[in-house]
Amino acid sequence: MNKKVGNILKYSVSISLAVVLLYCSFKGVDWQDFLEGVKACNWEYVILSMLFGLLAFYLRALRWRELLLPIDSSTSRLTCFNAINISYLVNIALPRVGEFVRCGYITAHSPKEHGPGGSSHRVASYDKVLGTAALERSVDVIAMFGILAIFLIFTWERFGGFFSEKILGAASGGFSIGKIMVMVSAIVAVIAFITCAILFADKWAPLRKIRGFCKGVWEGFLSCLKMKGAWKFLTLTAGVWFCYWMMSATILWALQGISPDSVSPELASAVDAIQSMNLTDALFLMIAGSLSSIVPVPGGFGAFHFIVSSAIAYVYGIPIQFGMVFATLSHESQAVNQILWGGISWISESLRKTNNQ
Image (tube, rainbow, N blue to C red; front, top):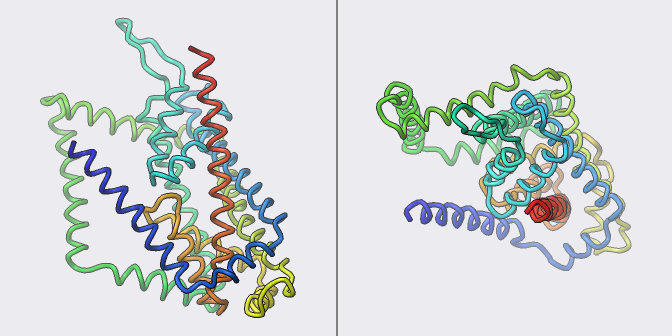
């Protein structure tokens, strides 16, 4: 019961945070100008952005499969693709839960292996698959901060102010000695618990199970050492982030295609202001949007809109409603993508189960 209450509180806080950020993002937006901007953009580029998003889904599936193959060589591309799609769909409602769902999906599709005494288990056990998912996510975090670091080395004079004042400034302002002490205490407690699980596992059955689970996760995490196609994995990672970049660029091109005569004078001046924006600016907006994934809100709602619209207003001095047009088209086009392909994968899985009954 306590666990259920805890989960309800956790997701309630997450959803409330998303609502607050959405309110702060849209506060002061002229809705007539906003809707005019959305309506007047070049929707062919928005559709192209969605296609790049779909390609990113597929490349992520192929990349994850490279980590899964050393554990279960029978893992198919379609299984990984469906797992990725369903995880995106679940994450829209329940942040981070989709990561656990996709691991369960892979395990459920793994063949059974018979052991001694008539026992059987899945070749790709859940704990090992979870380890590969953790590794895959870690690679994306490293890639995100790596791209950010390289980007700022060459563009600090133009974009550094936003990251130092709006991102780092806000983050550092949220810390206090008390919060730091709580974080340190939590880390020490986790380390102490893991140490006890290792030392006393043989004396207590629950600790043996915990140790076995952690061991499986660690083995999955180390699957990269058994991976044959390391260069393929890195190439797929580069391909995923290239798609993210193009998703941002295509939305920028969609807005650059707005005819100034079809919108209000204020929006027309904003359209003129973005005509000089190029792929470097698209990369900046992609990085800014990626940082929103750190905020634990469902599907990035609110966090993405707030950070991206703030970035556009801070760096380019463009009215907030035009920044919100970019943020909304970027985020909602991919949200539709996730719902569409997640729904298709979910339905196909349901049909498969029905046919197998």
